[in-house]
Image (tube, rainbow, N blue to C red; front, side, top):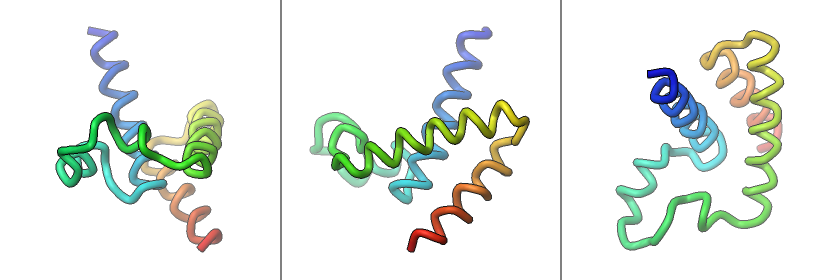
Length: 84
């Protein structure tokens, strides 16, 4: 049961980061691109993968600080608004 919960948590975090970076969940992307082999991360450009790696690291820091998923999402959105 613990392993299943970890997988669900990881999938939720991965989808949160996908939404921050790509604007959609993995399922939404796959539904829009059924002919593409793999997932959105497989076809991402280098810059997107670098940003994703930074988001994953920052996400780990925020988790260690006790931020819940909603709070982390708000911080990511606030940060991304500065960059546009």
